[in-house]
Image (tube, rainbow, N blue to C red; front, top):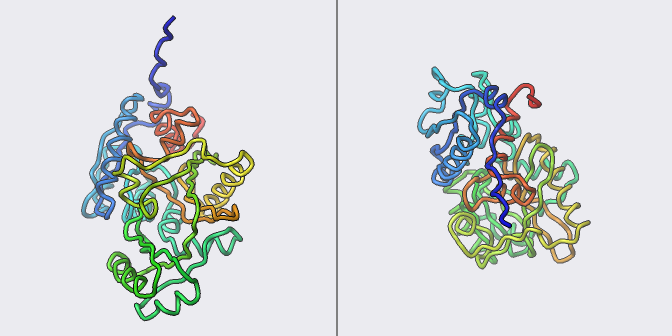
Length: 321
């Protein structure tokens, strides 16, 4: 006997009415523009499939123009990187009185800055790899002597692993610093944690199933995230149940201390002793066909369509509507 196909998710009519007309902001001018366009198109298709009145806005140039005579009631932010994920568009929409998805201004700005996020982690007693800022190539030898190698070099305010390098010597560190400094004046050098990588998606103050990541690349870089077909995702993540609960709680703690809301993703490493180490918080994670939040939601029984509607519903003053 054949079972009927499950019905596609449809938002309740009262929710559709309450949401009104929705603009999906995508694209932008950051280094993550192409990924953002993919995320935005996927979000738009899912909203339309769920019955929501939505349309695309490719945000380029002056962000203030997005709120000039708006013909929409709220915004689903699918902008990655600077301008869209760092509190800028959030501040503009807040001042215009237009509801938007995800974290507010302060949390967005803080999470986008990996260095200052790590200061918050340290101040709150949450585990994060040892780190230093680097302002000059002449700092390389001193940093290597303090932190030892290998090290990770990162532009502090880029996403999607753009500009990140693993280095083993002071000369490599100096070279990687110059590459990172070309992307951001603030460069973070971090102790490299050898071991498995995990990511935990958060939805409405709940941790979704953790995902274990593995790749043949040096680390889970831009190519492994968005282009490669050989990146391996483990759901279940491979941890014992108690360890996964510990991992999920750490992700929730990180999300809360940064001040995030509704949805996001926290990236975490585990060392050889089983200790978890926080890397960063993502407030507008990717929503492409390679992306981790939809993958984790699916493992929790939440379709992509339901996921985007649930994120959008939190923009309503009465989210129980």
